[in-house]
Image (cartoon, rainbow, N blue to C red; front, side, top):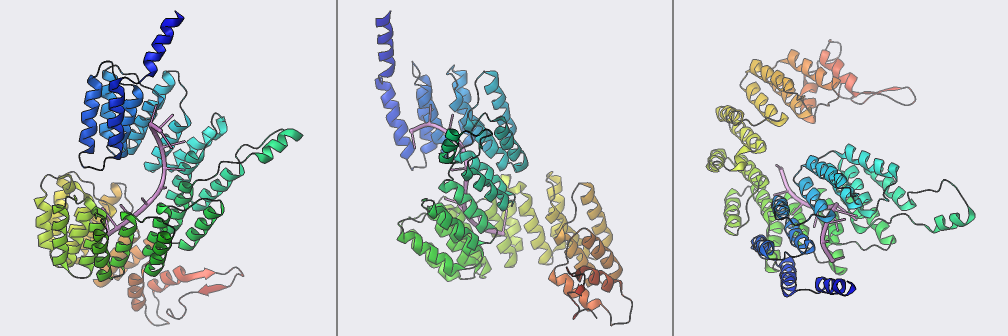
Length: 542
DNA sequence: TTAGGGTTAG
């Protein structure tokens, strides 16, 4: 009996020829760069599935992880299903990876269904299960629920959150702009979450020794990125200093965040300095680093510098991706070179980079701005049944372009077309259409559309109000303009500088009654802390 | 080291 068991164990733990064969192929797949990677993985999966006895669940999971890393989430889920159908058992790893795939596909609900399955099978979920779900909720813009789930886990004290879970929650808080709450959580995390309720002398010593969970580079990167996105690169630099003080080394993602932050502010010189700094510290820039810089140059109208860098990185062996090309396209159109842009667009396709909706958005916008609206429309319609034809943003761009080039009828046609396709107009769509109607003097139609929009559950935003007021003022419809102006202010929107200037010109000299003046005065009058009333436009409005 | 968090373009 003992002997048999020992033999059995031995057979099991020694790798069979086929096992090591699969191990080798999985390892080489992991490091393979090639475009056939997914196909090769699928081929290997089929072979493994047919092998008798089947390879271990460990090998299957390893292989499917390769697919997941390539963001082929639906494929990964299909493979798991095939495994189940072939009777290969499922474990918590498989469940967690599946939950992650559902979350990445924006199906958090399925993720929670799998959580229920884990419970039903009688196994406790792991910390990773919950982290995945929290991250899924954040991805689905359900940050409030993510935070609630996190709080519940803290309260139940079944798990001690780790770096990764804290990171996910901090990421969620940053995403909705609650950077200060995120910082608070970071400090809480460092202080150590579990405070003792009862003190003894010995335990107190242990507690004093006890550290909280230390934030990792990834956690700091979330904060660095968040500060950069909201424009405060100085705070981001402080966060970097804080991470260095804790002995963490900024990585390429940290530097990329800073570079992008400076580029967004148009401070290219500082971005270049960061690049120099990272190279000096032996951190190798990647395509994302260069994309930010190219985008920065384009935004600053330094198209020559952008072109130079574009060429330079290719000489270094980098392959421009769809983001690189899109930025370059934008730069070329903005610098009034539609011919070069079009050439580059053809080049990117020839080199196997597939344009995305964003690329087409840049392309169509650029074409419209360079008096090629008809060409843009032709290209758009040549996309045929492509999914991109169903993107409302592209319609918004093309409708706006048609209107601006003096072809309101094309704009109307496009609007009908998108409704026929069952696409849902956005506030932006309505805004453009309302300005089409207003410019044509069709204020009744504009009003109808506005009402229809509100019936559909959308409220006008600041842009829409400004457009309406400006159009009304252009057509000397002062009474209506005043109504809308009052409404927008009551809803907490401010007139933009164009609207403001137009309104100021219409205010009569002192002495004459003016509703417009009353509105503007109310808007620009603030009560100071000492109770004094201050009018911000006292020099402009008599 | 078979699972979970961080980077780029309208």
